[in-house]
Length: 345
Figure (cartoon, rainbow, N blue to C red):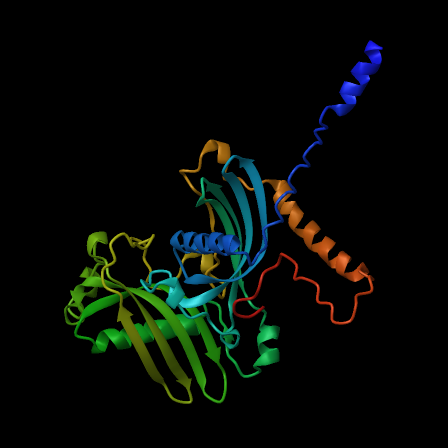
């Protein structure tokens, strides 16, 4: 009897069902606001740590991966496609006001892997690895057969043209005598008139252009606390007649902005790593020195290897997806890659 009563009481006890665990959040998409904010921070970081060539702008977020590290702590890995702008790296113009070079100007693309940490809602860059390359000549010619292509920065015509353009400026200005820092890019048009288009960074010296005529060797770059950098664009006609058109603008002193090799002889406007190349490679590999040891700035090989695997998986899934869809069905866009901001090369 006691056993029967116990069973009846047991049946009447409230049943507490297990609450199912909350589903994991959906993967972060490449066009999500959080990804865009992380990419903006990453691009600014890359430009701030680049010392030669031009600023780059975001063209596309290729992939984003989030690794939870604990409460309010995440590690983000971004794969970014960038495009070269017309702003030299020394220019004070904000990136959002810099014009991206058009496809017809022989665009230069940057590929970057960036590691960030989001701790208590605040993003910071831990490390970045980048390289850049010009679009293929075949791609440019296919769209614009008559467009001049990028020329090697150490091409003799380019060097001669840059020197002639700077001499032309210094011979006519009443302001500071300028010295060449580096050639940024150059193109050559072969017909109907042979033209050299060259862009180069310059710096003011402690001499006026008039004073330099007496002893140009005495003209030295201004010290860092007075430095004044600038930029020149020039068009030099060499055939059938010779003509030089040059426009130089100084930026004015920018506290905290320096050129990394002020003591180097830059009379040729070249650095050892650009000879034989058409563009300054965004060969940037930088680890944030303030990154904590627990958030190592190293890129795990598993993440890097996962790139090709993920892209191959997406392609295979698209190829083998034979599911019949109703008329008018529009599948949601994949979370990555993201939208193209300018153009694809």
